[in-house]
Length: 352
Image (cartoon, rainbow, N blue to C red; front, side, top):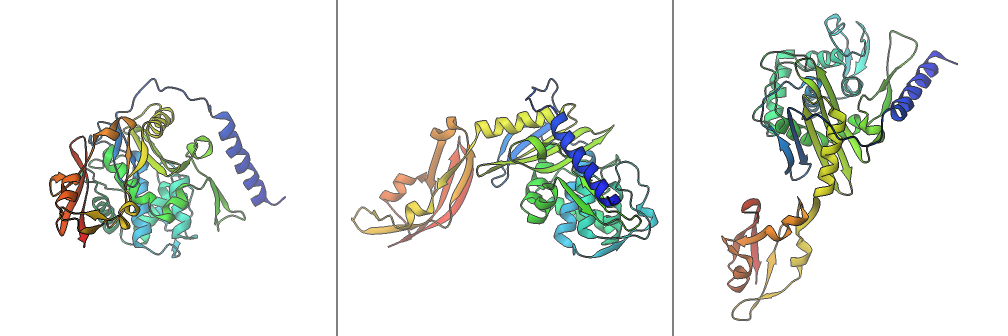
């Protein structure tokens, strides 16, 4: 048997052992995270949180932003030559060797599956200068809505002024998980990438155990340093709803993340609050019995609890929707409130 096949067999056995040796029985976490946040992917609604805006170190979950920055800005097929300065980086590694060649996408797999700090440094200083890449990371974070974060390196090793919040990291992850390439990478359990310095490929097994046993799990990244503690960003999809959960400095990060995901799927249901189809051909009558149609530009789907269904209020131009039907105008601003909080707004038009 060729050495590459032996390596692959060992990797497969390791993956199987990871699945079966990890306790599948739900265990209530006896400790809580220093900060945590769960959101729904599309609406970005916060489903649960604790200290969600507290600025904390986040260890290798930093690499979510590193990967997103690379994917959104650079050619993934570009071949990178490993420099000596990219090797022997502290912490997790895929053991890159000076002079070998890998594509950007291969390095992304090493970054996200094995948390390769060497891959992070190689990407950051090869696709562009390292300083410019760090600036681009921070610009990308702002595009995600992350206003309370700052990044000074691409890997998450502890550094002063390198921090995020549970909420910011959830927003960054939401944008990343909407990218099909990022989602493909972080949902991969095992893959081979090139290894020019040996006569066999590198076999990468994803460190994210949730992929192997949590129903619907599709990402995303683990992290640990002594300063940051145990950190985990998780994503799972059930039916049509995807929940992203972030736990920072969470001693029982697996158990706590499972609890938060379970609670989100149990408590919330994606609900279509505006169905364009209901209005498309429906004819209304004004006070003079003249027919008119309401043009709704798009559907609106939002995660709500069963207990919140009676708290939904529809308004047009500040008045109830029913009043607008009685006295229609040519156009108006259609708003939806949930417990007095505005959750949706769009322009609507009357077609006589």
